[in-house]
Image (cartoon, rainbow, N blue to C red; front, top):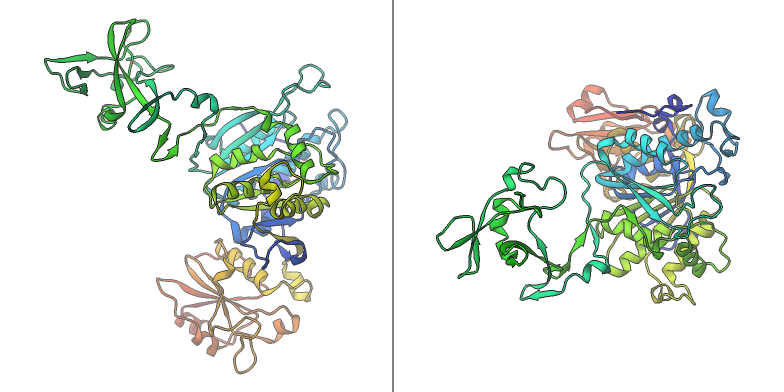
Length: 573
């Protein structure tokens, strides 16, 4: 497979691995919820590379649908490359606004260096049946396609959708009045589309009805490519029709009429269905005499609904309509903010369309270039419409993360007076928790007693880093059933607290955010004896500042000790 080479690639190839794990600091006063939680809808303010890394302990392998709208690198966006990559070449780029074509000879290199580590972290957050959508225009579309082939695998490419967002075309373009942008779609592994609602022009074709419902007739002979007998010989076979009983079979009788698939030129063709399918779905088949050929042919009753659920179809490769236009997105935002100054917000219907065929009603949707917050509104609208429980995660690094991104979500949750849409007037309901990126969890800081993380932040970090598996704060259980801040033995030392179960370990942690505590506490034999004996071939894994127990004794109790803050790394089983 062809690979894409660009200036700086060798320095950012594995940069996502060394991005520091930063704390997620809750902001209750900016949230819309009774209890701020990482398991709520989330809006995170901060650099999206660092935010994605901070989300891994809780959301690695959990996100069903990712949508991102990164800078298109037009030269007019004023975006700045700021990733702290330790290489002289990259350091020359830091803090410099990326210039226009012809003015900045490394503009494409900078953009690709920015995107590569973010795409790698986004892939880690995706479920195995997940899918990612990336909006982009022609400035970087070709480069992005090659980059995503490399990160996600060319075999996981689904499509490059043409979204008509300006039907009149941009009159200031030099040669061609551009009227579209692209959405690249890649799956992680096993994604299956849920399909989209039938377009109105399709529904008009359903004019017939029987006791099973409304339907249209479709020829059962295969059309288009591979429709000749020699193309699919296993799909060429005779079907026998009994006029008296109005029934079909694959066995010849004296009273039956033979029907074979024929092309319009009279040559032998093939059926769309195999013999087994033909027999199992014979109740959907209608036999009609074609007057122009004076012979019988087979047709399928294609029903509009199945058990009350309307049929869905594959989305097309071109998406067009006023609901997908840039003007539509701008008007929507103006209904929420009268003095809207946000340029080119994505329309809600575009995101609803994407989410509707790529995820179920309880899935997680992530947007790490959140902008005006369209993705959150789309999720809330879909939940309102179908009673779903989808969850959104937004990341926005710019100063407007609170004033525009989060404020838009606050307003649509509570209601927008004067909106032309009734559902927005009433409010969509829902909640979200607002977080900011805090200091990094680093060994040097812990040893110096600086920026010490909370108990839960330390637990998230240790559990994911040591096991590579998802952390769930609800799974933290103290051996005596007490709260972490009060759990201590008779000598005043904090007891190990169970922070989760992994495939190979029951994970415990002894920790309080304080340098003196780190210096004066240790794992004792009495503590080890109180740990629940692990089952199923697992071991207890205990993080603590020190231990007063011999390794042989720990092995006898199926316990592995790791010292804080030194030994923070992923363990082999």
